[in-house]
Amino acid sequence: MRILVLLIGLLLHLGTAHAVPIRIKDLANVDGVRGNDLVGYGLVVGLNGSGDSLRNSPFTEEIMAGLLERLGVNVSQEAFRPKNVAAVIVTATLPPFARAGSQINVNVAAIGDAKNLLGGTLVMTPLNAADGEIYAVAQGSVLAGGAEAGGAAASVVQGVPTTGTIPSGARVEREVAFDFSQMTSLRLALRNPDFTTAARVEAAINRSLGRSVANLMDSGTIAIDASVLGNVNPARLIGQIENISVEPETAARVVIDHRSGTIVMGEDVRISRVAVSQGNLTLRVREAPVVSQPNPFSPGDTVVLPRSQAEITQEPGIGFAEVSGESSLSDVVAGLNALGIRPRDMIDILKSIHAAGALHAELIVN
Image (cartoon, rainbow, N blue to C red; front, side, top):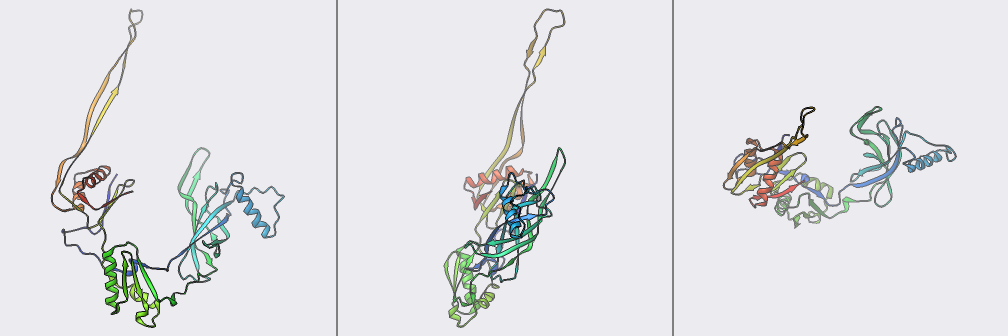
């Protein structure tokens, strides 16, 4: 198992790194300009016998019968047992300023015991928002996210065949009532709140516009008073502000993923003077009893003689590795990699260094 160490902003020489200027549009969102979640309940038809079993999913039969009745087909007295129909939950995000007639992507997920949605077609499904109103209608062929194959005694599944997407599968029918052009007070919300970054954004906006328009409210919010600029279009003002570049400030953080053995760290992570000793001892005791049996027609009893094997094995590790001064954690990890330390051991070492108070960063373990 290989360890993947991603060094974000790797320090070539300690203390000489500089942040890369980032556009404000990549650092912050405009308050109020956001998407809205949509959800609906529908049917996927045309499956090759991999749909819901109606005995375990009676709701599929109910909605299918209701759909056919609306189309003029009465099936209330019929033995209706199709195997090519699956009940699904349809989700989508209505983007900001979406207009009636525009198309958006939708996700489809089975809620019954359907085997897969490969080759199915979603029947016209209304999508509701949190206010209960219908904002879009979805329909189209489902692109399943996996595949399934099997025989009488074995089967194999790759991916998740019970979920899928429909690119541009929903058409917007209702617009969100939001008049952005009438706003006189705007707010920028930083995606990663930080007082230093927020102060730099405020200064960069005021310097670019030549007036004191931006005002720092807290670590994640910068208020913009558009009335100071006179009769200006807020959309045009945001278009001018969002392309201003700012050097963001990030907190020292180390993220560890136990499952994949991934370590991600920032350039500001530092480690104090510390000594590390690592190694594993493995004790194995094996019992291999031997049966002693006398020859035929000779006196004596059959006995079991115990025979034990005990051994202690020490796996390769490191003795005492000393780190002096305020070193970069990337240098420490590079040194541990050079010693051939395994991913799990390296993660345990970093956690122990943090517990000892020598790792000056926020440690996040997933």
